[in-house]
Amino acid sequence: MRVEHQIRAFEQIYQSYDGVLPLHRFLFAYFKQNKQMGSSDRRWAARYIYSFFRLGKALSELTPLQRLAIGDFLCQQSTSLVVETYLNNLSPSIELPLDDKIKLVEREYPTFKLAEVFILHTHLSPAIDQAQFFRSFFIQPNLFIRVKGTHIQAVINQLLAKDVPATEVIANALALPNGTKLEDVITDSRLYQVQDLSSQKTGAYFKPEKYDYWWDCCAASGGKSLLLHDIEPNIELLVSDVRENSLNNLDERFQSAGIKKYHKKVIDLLQNNDQTLHHYEFDGILLDAPCSGSGTWGRTPEMLWFFEKYKIESYVKLQKAFAGNVIKYLKPGKPLIYMTCSVFKAENEDVVSYIEENFPVKLEQMELIKGYHDKADSMFVARFIKQ
Figure 1: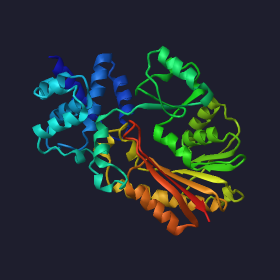
Figure 2 (figure 1 turned 120 degrees about the vertical axis):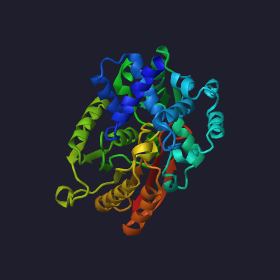
Figure 3 (figure 1 turned 180 degrees about the vertical axis):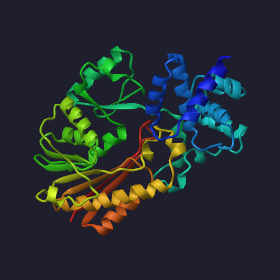
Figure 4 (figure 1 turned 180 degrees about the horizontal axis):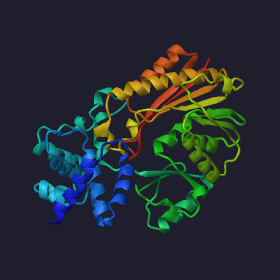
């Protein structure tokens, strides 16, 4: 039977995956190794494993196949053989709105608790609407791009010509269906940057001035630096990261964006960098700190299953240390922008309190940017001014 074939494919992936690699990278390697799987097999296998993990730790007492059927019922609008086989009585209701489907699952499975989708819910920032946040894990996030202002209509026209629905959600930011192959529909990659909506919104806190010297001290592949440069092209910029391969990716992105003038250093922010930075004084510092990434788990729902609580404190130690080691290079009266893609209070509001209490800075403004209303990630941003 075809359903048994699909179940076997799901079980093989489920039993092979240990959470070390991001799920999308694991699937890419798995499908490459199992070339006997056709495109339909790969599509169903990917749908099932993502639906399974989107249920988080809810109904953990059930078998994996029962949980898969419930997750697939909640996440999808078209039925599947697994739902028809293991959740036959609810299968006709799969096209109902999500809230109605949640009520059906609650009625059918009295032990179902929405909060157990995100098992670490007691650690959330108080700004989070927990019910809305939990239900967002059953919804596939959008793909967002930031378009250079003068090209927005041209890009929209190219997308519509390929029947790709595009919505301008804020100025120069387009929401597209997840999985859109941009290289097939937009002719010039220099016209846009892939960047989540909430990440784009952090730019409102940067406020660079002409000819400022800014330091993006955890630059990774340069997303925030590109945003900063778009806001004010006439800045001097130092980008650094402890991972040289990330900075190589940054070089490629900067080259594609036409940015040629910037400085780059491999810097470990846990070390004393006075010898490297002894003569540097910055007009602004971006600290996009390493974190749990919990605000992005709608894109990586496997983390709902594999993430362990003790890791939060490990990230908090890094965040506090990084802040202390960069503030001394900031000019008085100038901003430190602290950011995470976390929704945990310990990484956000608690770190803000620690920074303000232990270093010569004053908090000007902070916000947890809630992406769950926009099919986007959630991010935290705080703007300090050095005293």
